[in-house]
Length: 621
Image (tube, helix red, strand yellow):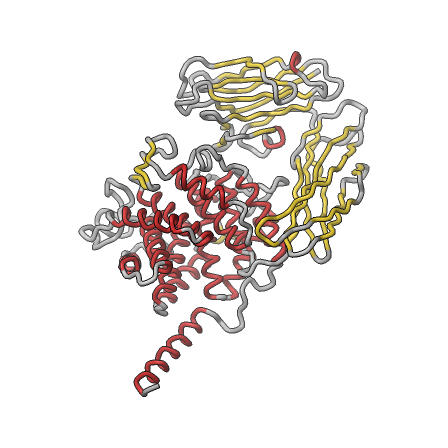
């Protein structure tokens, strides 16, 4: 090697050492102290719960376009992080079914122009990132090609004639904001990092980063405000966690593209500001502005924290800074311990504070915290367990014991068979049989967990007080252990608002229905929802009263399969003017077990104003 080459080599080596010092403190390790198998198992049960809301015909998560992109991207993160590949077919289903043009109101409030683009430029970018993720998982070039098409569409909205640059938020070119430009930098840098010999997208990413960091949207505290005023100054609007996370993620991906060590101090400043006093953390918990008492997050805000954690995971992986990995562990533990119900649903408020909201958006968001806790190299073995039903209801007859059937589903990954022991536990005076069950699971790696089911018979003694009572089950195999529970509601009265935790045990089948908060559950199109009332064995008559409006069909059943229509709204009601408490006699329809079912659906499935229920009561004799 000649002298100039040696000098260049030494300079490069020195630069690499400086960068390494910035990126990886020598004493740090990825996810220190994390229990890899448990973290993987927790992410798996939460991911499975999320995918139970995936609607395969429209190939999305109901009633939300950009949120569906982020939810699918989260599932991509899950598969990439854990090695589980069960949901690749759903990614491809969405790609093939939804890549065309669609009228406004079908999948999005906006007209979809084809190739996952619309007037909402940020929506288009979310889909671009989703298809880069799909390419990473499969190496199928069609996904990367689609991401390029989306980037080319967005590129047309970069406008240096206004504020010196930046991508417009919408097709009308009315606003330049943090989310659209954070997405632009991340997307273009991701494209460069996957396209050999690329210069175009690298140039766009660098241009975007230079503009964004000089735009004034990063305030003096290192927090990202929402956007710019017409005079190109920061509007000082709410610091949303997803804007902070995207700025971090944009810088990290550009750093991988350029190895420019000057980027990392900005990334660290953004990260440190997020967890500093006055940032995005309250009592150790990542907290959105709309999580505060007296506020509630809309359907967009429900997913912001998950986006932050997606890019915080990247930060922890890239820097291996113990402060950042500790924050991952803290959020994941808090979500699992405080923000989860018996059916492994994860809520909006990660502290578990009430009122809490649970839906597929909140599930996707909190799942990102659990994914971040999974080690970068997935464990060879894992063991998880869930219960079904997780939230059963018992309405006992006077003076009689009541039996409930509960099934424990055990899942495992690994290279060799596992002998799994399942041991249930119940409140004092209750009986669960069998008291111990051993099953053999024969997994074949980590790509597709295998499952076995253990049926349990739970005896609830007469005189048990009304309320929730937990029956737990622990599955163990060697050093692997995982606990699940079924929260059994013992009740003598039926009286609840929809959209609350009190509704959940009675909701037998949510199908594609939605809840937008307290006193608001509705079913549009061909979706529906079903309540089950397991009246006592000595019941002779029963009725249910629903406060309901808009375009409803109400059906009743004694077995949840054969339905009789008892009410239909024949007018196209869109404003709730027909809201009323309507009572339905269930007596002729009670099943042999005295259970009654009530199903609500949409009487005009093509116009999007399906039956909406506010409050439910039921009585019996």
